[in-house]
Structures are given as C-alpha cells and as structure tokens.
Image 1 (cartoon, rainbow, N blue to C red):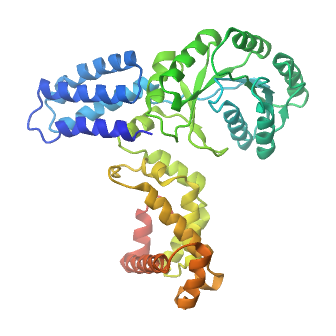
Image 2 (image 1 turned 30 degrees about the vertical axis):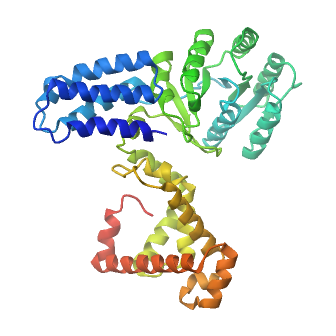
Image 3 (image 1 turned 90 degrees about the vertical axis):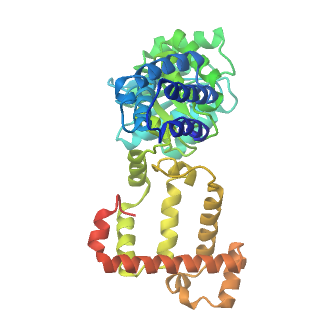
Length: 441
C-alpha cells in the first residue's frame, strides 16, 4: 500500500544524497517533495501543512545543515515526525479491565466491522479469555448470519436475541454474558452507508446500556479522506476510545493511517492486514513509519515468522539442509511455510533495502504456485529420490500439475543448486553458519 509514497519520498532523499553541502534551497526542494508525496497519498491537507511546518523547521536546524550525511539526517527528521503524527513510539492497547468487559464496535457498512469483531474475539480466545459476540446489526441483510458463521468458525458463541431490535438484543445479551461468566463481550453494532440521526440514537442507547470500556471505530483504509471524515463524526457523537484500520493489504494510498490519529485525536489500536481470521495485529507507529519510508520492518517480519512458521519443523529442515539430506518433500514443506506468511509483496515490504521498483512480484507468486503444483504431483518416492525422475515420469507430473517439462527441469536445477550451496556452507562450518542466521528457516 505504501509503494507510491515510498517512490516519492525516495526522490526527496536522493536529491540530498551526495551533496557536498546542504543549503536552505536543497532542504526546501526536499520538503516540497515530501509535501507532494503526502498529498498524493490522500493525507488530510491540514495534517500535511502542520507536518511539513515541523519537518522544515527541524530540517533547517544545525544538526542537519552541518551533518556529513544530510540525507540520513533528513530521513531521521521525517521519520520522527511521522511516528509522532501516527501516535508515538509506544503502542496503545485495547484495555478491558471489568468482568465482563464490553467492547462496542462502530463503523460504516463495508468497513469490515463484523469480520473485525470476530477477529478480536478469536484473539482474546487464544489469549485464554472467554469471549462472547453480540449480533446487534439488525439493518444489513445477513449481518447476523455472517457473525454466526464466523463465531462457529472460531468456536465463540454469538448471541442473536430476536434478531430485530438491536437495543433489546444487547440488553438480553448483557444478562446472558453475566450468567454464563463471559469475561469479554464484543458488540457488533449496525453499519450504514452514511451517518444518520437514527443510527446515532441507537448507538447512544447501546452505549448507555453497556457502558463500554472501549468504543472502537473500524475504518476502511480504502476509503481515503471519507474514512477520516466519518471517524471525526463518529468521535464527536460517541467519544471513541480508539480506531481499528482495516484493508491495509489492499490498494489504499496510505493516507488514512497517517492522518486519522491527528484528525480525531484518537489512537489507532489495531490494524487488519488480511482476510484471514488471524490477520489482525497491534499498531506500531514507528514500524509503519519505517515502511512508509521504505526502511522495512524487521521486528514485524521476525514476529510474523515466529507466529506463522513451525519453529521445530524449521530447525529440522535447517539441520537436514546442512547435512545434505534435504529432499523435495522438505522443499514443499518450506514453500508451504513461507506461503503462511502471506503474499510475497507483503513480506518484501518488511525487508530493509529490498528493491521494490521494476520488480514483478506476481512472477514470484506464480513461480511458487508452479513449484508447489509440481512437487505435489510427484509420488513420495519421487520427492525423496528425485534422481529417478525420467522422461515418462516428468510427462505424468507435467500433466498432473498443469506445467511444462521446462518448468520441472528448472525446479530440479534450482533444487540441486540449493543442495550444492548447503554443502559448501557445511564445509565452512555449519555451527558458525547457523549461529549467524537471524531466525531459523
């Protein structure tokens, strides 16, 4: 989502790099480039104006003007101000201390509110809590059915009441939660295509009824400035405690995540980063600032690897590779492990220094699909002993996987090169090599 803004900001930095001396004009040009990149990313105009004013003031300071690497100093200034703009270095968590504790979800229709409610319930359940979902969206067709299906999927009960009167459903759901000792109650309220008085009156009644510790608005990153304006209106009426920004895996330009905090003065507490029920995570302003500036996000990458990759399996694979016992069956397992982490583009965005320009990530995804299809079309014996793959076997695999003989030969060549490389590392000393690995893979 940050590809366009990264390109623009990198131009601003390139204009400063390699200069023997930084002048006020150099800084003015760089600041102008930053301003244009933020406006094109659909960041609120007033937010951009205040941000640029701070950056310009600090960039013209002595530390930048006298620096031996002014481009790096300029990046530091921009990054620090981005972090401050989006909420500071310390993330703000969802806080529920009562028993039961109520979380009220609000937002416009299509923002992903119902799915996000289920994602939160799933997160709390994994944390050892006993959540309950209350289906209080009686306006959108099939909203209650959708929440029931999601609840069944994650094993969390959903209270639906009479399915007609939202306030009555919440009132009865509250009693139900207290009776069955649910410690976290997430109320999915009605989403509309636009904000209206009837909708807000209903939300006011529900708020008064449950006295929620958290009132979270779900904001669609794809909506741009409309999402920011809606958040501002919801906040003025409900006094939100925080925001959850969804669809960050989509084609949004990034403006929502940069400007929402400043416009509403409410923190972004969580972000939705995919369609899977597990694809929700805390919002770290410093990590997103790094990604916006194309500096990667190593901490999130490591956390993602630890969460999605079977560490025991990864260690076994690493040991096999070093001993030269790594076969195509192990190779297939590794491909599946990597796929768990999400699309390649999403992973590469977290890697510092990874070139993003002129890189066709779709080819990488396509190649991984081919590899998986080819190996899955082999017998277990063929995976473990690829040298037995003669012409007739390859023809059968080609038909079964929908690939060509060239695709199969290319895969086998890559596999042999990998084995050869591992043998060379083994000669260098496997303990020394494994000790340098950032994480086991």
